[in-house]
Amino acid sequence: MTPDTTVHKTRKRRLSLGPILYYWPRDQLRSFYDMAAESAIDIVYLGETVCSKRRSLNTEGWLEIADMLTRAGKEVVLSSLSLIEAASELATLKRICANGRFRVEANDMAAVQMLAGKSGFIAGTTLNIYNTHTLEKLASLGAERWVMPVEQSREILHEFRQQMESSMEIEVFAWGRLPLAFSARCYTARNYKLPKDDCQFRCLDDPDGMLLRTREDDSFLVLNGIQTQSALTQNLVNELKDPDIDIFRISPQSLHTGKIIKVFHDCLTGQQDIDQAVAVLESLMPTGPCNGYWYGEAGMLAGCSTA
Figure 1 (cartoon, rainbow, N blue to C red):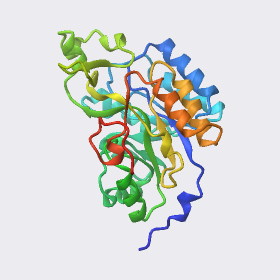
Figure 2: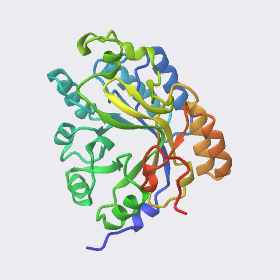
Figure 3: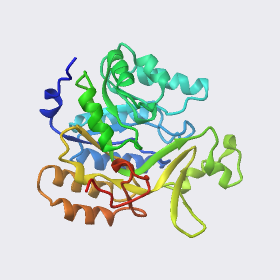
Figure 4: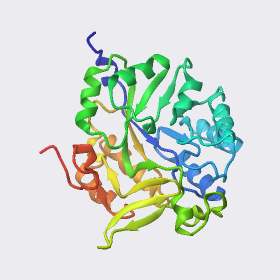
């Protein structure tokens, strides 16, 4: 069958705000989403995706924020936990998948099983989809959007788009420290010589995760509870005109997220020059830039291009 590539090319490219990957206090969360409601972001992903012990908000609290954002004209998606380890986490997942009001981002195959046959769910980046056969299978189960794994390149994206039979939306991780891996062990608790089950919620002390440096004092990784991230920030603002990308995801950070959204929106609408935007955005990064994965190189490299 010849893929129908006409549908996605007529879609308006949009900006999304990914789920907060860090542990922030309740007041900081509410203030952050008040900012998001006033911003130019189109889609907001809500919920805890890293660790179920992070309970600044319960499910009802997230739904309250979802209602507020909906009234502000935002599309809201509820994101599921990426690693299910306990019956209580499975019960929360069931509640999210059965909410009946908001679409769900499935970040674990258990969520896919619960959402199968319910049109409109989002296949999250942690599902690790690496071929179009798997992607089409998820489309047949009701997935309407796919968030690419961060280690996949623009070349792979274009190959997928050419091979896909469905008109599924494709979303890329356009800004933020790259989520690289999850573990059953908690790196943050171990750093403080605490057991995982008595971590004392030390992730609250690191609103952007714990920076890990090499012996040469180079920024290397960020430890975020059970998640490992890149220390460097991926920035794909220069890819905003790529016709194969429907949605550009901005991953929240504790400072400057509102400014980052504005720069991306101004570039998307032609109000700001891309080269100028790159310089501005680099000044808003916690450490520095990287874009190697996107160009098929080592992920921690910066300044890569197709040239």
